Length: 127
Image (cartoon, rainbow, N blue to C red; front, side):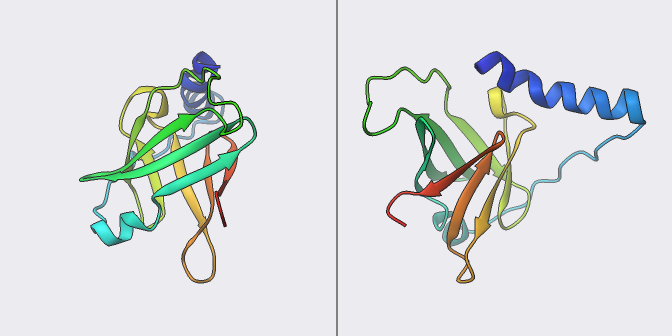
């Protein structure tokens, strides 16, 4: 549910600050080369949907699509631009994914093994 996705991060930050006195430092974006970004581009599959990752000049774009076996299913999550925080960690620029971290778990050859976002793990299609 889109409302839950948007609320999770805000509730987490509020609870950490107000219940435990902890604040997270503001994420500091970094710059990655087109080659570094390109290794993450592709299609990733998870339960009930697909994540399509493409590159853009500032980072990545994440689109959530219905599963290949049910292309007419309505997902209702708008695409999100992700800006790099490190060589494998990103944060949403705005919208539903704003403040939500997305990262890639890598194989020993530095290719993506999994995409992790919103409490979900997605595996590359065809891997």
